[in-house]
Structures are given as C-alpha cells and as structure tokens.
Length: 312
Image 1 (spheres, rainbow, N blue to C red):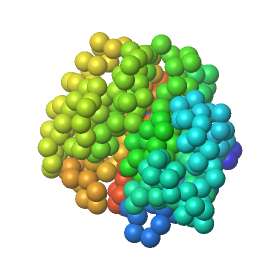
Image 2: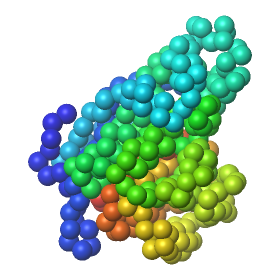
Image 3: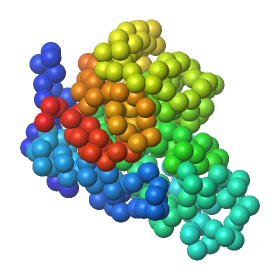
Image 4: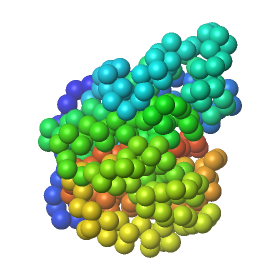
C-alpha cells in the first residue's frame, strides 16, 4: 500500500490532528476456522473494504505489516507451544492428541485449520508493528483491527485465540514507555492480558465486561446495559485511572461483541456509544494502539470499525 495524502484523523475538539497508521494484511481475511464457527476472519476484509468506500483511508498511512517472526512469539509464549502451532495441521492433528489436550487446541473454541500458524503471525504482526511505530514516534495512533485476541495464554489457546498479540504489543511498548495502560471494552474479560502482567506495576489492565472474573480493575456489567449507563461508568473510571496511573501509552481493545445484537454478546451498546469510548481515550493525547477483538455479527463489525475513524 502507498502512503496517503493526509495521514491524520479529523480534528479533535481542541483543533489538533493525530497522525494515524493503519495496519492491514490482505491475507488476514482468507483464513477459515470451520463450518459453524462464530469467528470469521473475512470480517477484517469487509472492514477494509468499507473504509475504502468511505474514503477514510486518505486520513491514514496504510501499511502492510510483516508477519510476526517466531522469536517475537517466543517473547511471551512457550517454545513447545509455538512449535506445536507451527506443525499441527488438520491432517496431522489426529496423531497429536496428547498435544491437542495439553495446549487446548482441537476443541470447538480453538480448532485446527489450514494456515493456523501463519494466521497467528499475520494478526500479531500488525499489532507488534503498530507498537513499534508508536515507540519510534512515527505516529500518534496505530490501528490493527485484525488484532485484539485477548484470551490466549502463555502456554495454551483459549476462546478463539491462539497467540496473544496484545501481550506481545505491550511488551514492545514497554521497551520505550515506562507504564502502559490496557483497556478492554469487549463483552468478555481480557483475562489473557491481565494474567500476563499480573505481577508487574508497569502494566495496568482495565476490563469492562459481562463475562469473566478475577480482574485487575473490576467493572462488571449487567446484561442489556445501554450507551448512557455505560458512559456514566466508563468516563469517570477511565479519567481517574489516567490521572492516578499516568500511563505513557494506551492499548484499547475494541471488541464489537459488546454491541446490541451480537450473536455471542448480551449488551445493548450502539455504534455511537462504542465509538465514544475511543474518542474519550483519544482525548488524553498519549500514544494509542487500537485493536479489534470479539465481534460475531458481521454487519456490526464493519460499521463499528468504520465509525471509529471519524464520523463517516
């Protein structure tokens, strides 16, 4: 992809503009979890097509990220788990039953499919590359809608997630930022990220969700919560977090399964309410990495991700 003419978002209320880099790999939408599985990578290609039709790409520098290298994955995940992801295929999985059980792969949530390892490297590449560009001060906001797979653990897959691109991106940010704040507005708990940084004060995790337990900052939500009620909690909580913790970079996971009508979610947020969370976090003017996450109703995914770039 080529650099665009105006690599900035529309003006913020204070009149300033932020340089934005958008990371998209054309192969990310070609992977297939299997018949009936709610996780559908082609949704990312649909988001990209919508951004193009809205003519929003002209506001960003569009980059095709490299696939994450094995040594990058090993900065968090164990060697035996990464080696397993490299070699397991639909054809060989029946010979690896012990490993499948050990790494929680092969179950409905985390099936073995063609190109699994490269899929992990593709979505992870965008998140880590985005973090690297923020470190180098080449942009103010980095976006990778293919990322945000927050359930993956150090040694196993979980909840449709195999490699935790968020953890790896935060580790990259920590190379140049003293403290990083992770905020998760997916309907599910960002447990894999919280667990990874549970013993360090350099990363704070905040998760607004209906499903999950054992949080760093616990914001449990009732089913059916709407925009007004959500913002009533979100803004004062995040304002206080930003004031007290004073992060030098923020990672915001924007799982769209918290929107009304998601097939796996149960909240009642609108696209406008969801986007308001992004707008609010952007207002603090710290380096910001925006990632995708859970989203299982295709029309919500495309419109939600498009909306966040600035009132199409």
